[in-house]
Every structure is written in structure tokens, then in C-alpha cells.
Length: 110
Length: 113
Image (cartoon, rainbow over all chains, first blue to last red; front, side):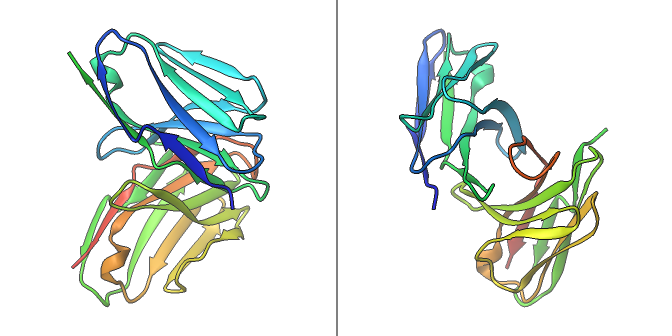
């Protein structure tokens, strides 16, 4: 069974600084997704990474995938308050199921 | 113009009751899913349908029964509700089965008392 671990689980960010969330997965996967969830809300798709070395950027967020290391990272540049949310990574297994990490709850403080 | 919608948004009921949650997508997708998010925000797939056929059926009590009357709808019926069923249930859809992005509905918060 594909297991996905995120760390840290909680991240207190200072505005203007850079941070990284790590997502490790246990077995071969060639697709990795990042989602954002605001409190009491649904999941919003941020990035879909489908190949080794894939890098995608949107605003202050950049995601990358290293399939050999079974690692994806979500890098946050110059954190702002609007980025406070819970971020989930999910990896796809050979039977097409998505396994989600536990989520990283991000709080951005002034 | 909601892409994936669920009803109801909130559901409070007593143990032993039977309830249903409805999901509809207007994206023209072929695949739909049900996920359960527990109180610690952990998300787990329950079921998936592709073109009205069940393709994922995770280890879920048989009190849970999905039904897909057509490609655009996937409903979840729960019999004999238990306290442990309290969670947020998300419906999602994707273009097809496999390497496709999943779009999530707003969620249904089920509270069993």
C-alpha cells in the first residue's frame, strides 16, 4: 500500500520568509498532486506533477517532483497571510488510487 | 456555476438512522469518487465509479452503499449510522480513470449523535 508522509505537520511562517513542505511516498508513483484546503472548505487543486523533475510554479508557490527519491516539495516564497491553510500532497498508486498525506497546517504571522 | 456539488452541506442525525448524500458534477467527467475526511483531516478514498461502474471499493463497512444513476451523479447511502461515521464526506470527479486531476465538492459534514 502506498503511504504518503508530509512534514512538517504544522508550520508557523513569518511573513516575508521562505519555507518548504516535504512529501515522501513509500512506493513507485509517477503522479503527485498538491491541494490546498481552507478551514471548513473543500480541496483546491494547486499542482499536478506527472514526471520526474517536473517543476510547477504559481505565484509564491513552487512544487517539484523527484520520483527517484520519492519526494515532492512545495516551496513557499515570501510568505503572506493569504497562504494560511492546510496543504495536502497525494500520490497515485498503480491501481489509480490517490493516497493523501496527513496535511500541513500553515499559519502565517506578521 | 458549481462544478461539483453536494447536498446536504450539513447533516445531523441520530445513531441507527439511514441517510443519503447526493453528488452531482457538471464537468462532463467520467469518473467520480467518495472520500472521507476524519476529525484529524485525514482523507481516505472510499469508492470510485467510472462510467457508472464501481472500480474502487475500499475497506468500507457494507452499511455504506454508493449508487451512480448516471455519469454525472454519485450518491452515498449510509445505513444504521454509528458515532464513528461522523466526518466530512467529499465527492470528487475527474475527466477519466487514472492520471487525471480530481475536482472536489464542498463536502458534507455528517454528525451522528
